Image 1: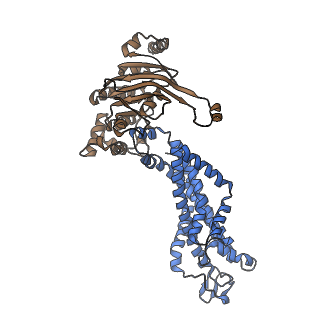
Image 2: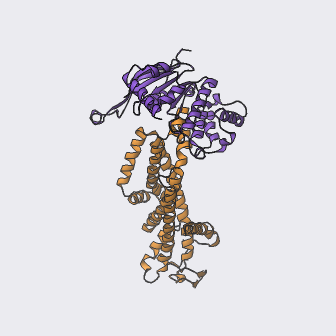
Image 3: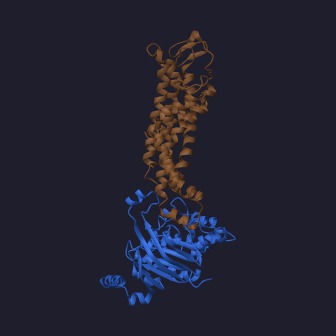
Length: 269
Length: 268
């Protein structure tokens, strides 16, 4: 049972990685004679296993390409947020002083805004692109990493092996890299999985609102939004990408919980 | 070279004092951990610093190695004033090393013994062996009574005594002149205590080390110290040759300490 989240995530990675190589899809051209066809229908370009949307585009292809988009944006955002958060949090926790004060107050200020609102403001203010979505989502996602690693660094800086390294004269960057950072890996990996789920959900939300990715990109959020007015007559347009999104989020959540129980804070060794 | 290796003068360390606006200072209570301590350690000499828990011994040790910034007073080695750790010239940083109380937590549990000693050599290439480092590591481990196979092990795989030997090896790797041992045998059982004390005595002779040996146990200090300094409530109440302080203590607190130690010995 514990392996199910791994298997599901591997499946998504496989679909996101290999799917677009097997299924050809371009969101711009439309085929109006094939519009709103239910799953399994024969259409002009073959069989629409998951049906078609209001413009006659294949929903299966949108789910597959949407998986790739979500995984790429999730990985890029979590990697960027992790890099910034771990660097800032570790340095603030270890060095304390003004850096720590500035970080703590900065986090307080950022937490005063609802994260999604801040993301919407950033995403809405500039031209739509993948880079913009990653930047907008990273703008708030790094805070969790910074808070967790700051706490760990604050605790570890008092450990005798860190004192021993300082007495030895080991340079500060080396102390951070050798004596502090290795102990943050477990909690950071656990947090990264949970953040990945939140990022995928937030990206879908932005695309649903039409302020995330450009129209040429394929996103589950866009597909769900495209089908919202046909929920009674053509449920598959919104429901199937929605199910794909939900299954991914639930499994990442379970995996995150497993990792948190294993590597979460308090398990420094 | 001066006759005194380590010279501590009028050392005062307090905690809880925060630089800042006056209204903050008024609400923060200051605790003076060390108040006007002066002591000397000569070349090849071992000075035992004794006192009850909370008397300020460890704070003196941490101030000497630079982990604690004193409010006032000076710490000099060979006449060179020592600043906080990390701001000392490399030679002075190497000169004063420390062995900590808890042998396990003073070693990074994610590093092997080879990596722990290797870090010392990487930090101070001047003291690193010129030839084969593996052979030098094995010689160093042999010096502290450890088998060469220990080099591949992590701290978590070693016993308390072995961990303390590794701590000593790490300190020796940079060829220090003064070893500050802060309750270095207190966390060990009695038989291992005796082994580590014997090791320190041997190393002191073979490496020409001076030591500031901190302990609350007069019996342990008696076995290793040439001179003894007694602390109480942050103040040095008495110091002198070990025999003199233990046989004919002048200060009433020292008399009480010696009396309590004798009582314990008689009972056991």
